[in-house]
Amino acid sequence: MPLKDLPADQRPREKLLQRGATALADTELLALLLRTGLAGKGVFALAEDLLAHCGGFAGLLAARAEDLQRVKGLGPAKRAEILAVMEIARRAIAEPLRQSPVFDAPQRVKEYLALQLGGLPHEVFAVLFLDHQHRLLELEEMFRGTLTQTSVYPREVVRRAMALNAAAVILAHNHPSGVAEPSRADEYLTQSLKSALGLVDVRVLDHLVVGQGQVVSMAERGLL
Image (cartoon, rainbow, N blue to C red; front, side, top):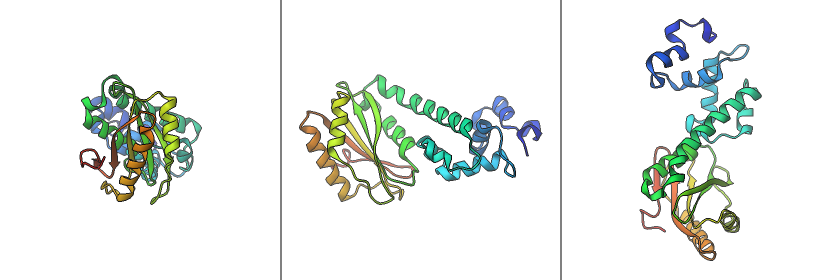
């Protein structure tokens, strides 16, 4: 059923304006953004399909244009609007980290990375590049792998750190299995990157492992 044909108290826009955004379910929020479905599939079903495809809003936050192209019913206009809204959300979350040292709010860093990497079906290795005051310069996805393996090249991380004139980094990657426990391979990779970055005077402050609803700090575990 089109949104305009729903009873007024069931329309996402009216519910949001009358009761606030928290009153809407995930599919209703997304349906409000999508506005229309397609032939044979209503907007709520399309919203459900999109959330299932991306693994929820966490996956949608990290989705690329090519990921959205795989969802039937999302034309260029809808894809552009979704990507714009997701980028606004990411920038809003990152803004405080750009204005003050990341260790002033370590939990915010974990929450930021959980939103960026949590729930993805593939492994991603990302780096937070920091300035001399440990404020965020950029968060960049450096490598993307399969469910079980990512090839990480220290020289590429070093090259990017030098290009950004970074003084320190926080490494991060997700475990698609949902278990955030660091592996021996994670420990070995951390030490390899720490050695490589140390040659250009860039400190590795932490390596965060993102699972389902949990982010583990290797520095807090004494593994750095």
